[in-house]
Amino acid sequence: MKINLLVLLLLVTALSSFAQRNLYTFNNGILYTEENVKAFIDTMQRNTPLTYQVTPIIYHKVISKDTIVNFLTFSRANLNGQPRKTVTLKYEQDSIFLLLNKKLPGFSLSDLNGAVTSSDELQGKPTLINFWNTQCKPCIAEMPQLSKLKDIYGAHMNFISITDDRVEEKDLVGFLKNKEFNFAVLANGGEYAKSIHISGLPRNIFVDKAGIVRYIQHNYPLDLQGKEISPDSPDNYFTKIIKELVGVSK
Image (cartoon, rainbow, N blue to C red; front, side):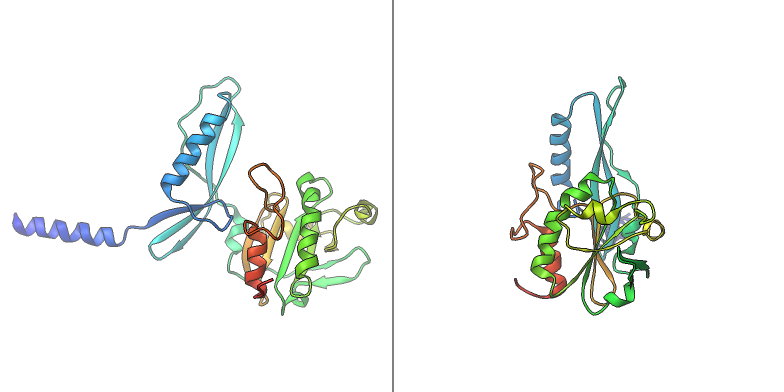
């Protein structure tokens, strides 16, 4: 009996040493514990009308030794008269995030003047690639703030955008005429966006100078009131990412 108990204790100790800790992120550079997330979910539930169901969704996992980092978002759906269900975590892999820390698949696309830009030309400098289209209101809304980032870091980094709008069907030059957007615009990018599994817009991909995808973000950073965060703010994680990639302190 003593031998069996000793074996059991050793087994429990071994299993404990291999136990993985779960942390969570809203893809903003901050890690949260399970307790943090539970408190956040409880707050969301209390502040959401009873006619809606809140569902936390894990859309990507990064496993490193004894830690699992879960990328978390939330969906909110009208119950249409049905009773609320118990809130449970749901896992739905967003395939674009499988590109993290891998080589960005190559592309060759034309700008609005017909000049061709390929992904190979971008190597040597980090690159921010903004995916958008003319029907995406959040895409248009973030253009001025993205342009400010280029104003500040354009000497150190490539800033390009890819739209799935086709120049044969859209007057993109006319559309952008009164928009505050200084990125190079590559058109007819729908097939490329589809090939790398971009499922929603806007999408901002940060690539290092060797062409490796380092960060994938949705829209430009917003504060709790839904207002754009200044590029100068320490809370702006786009700025933090850019500083890391270009290696400057500005």
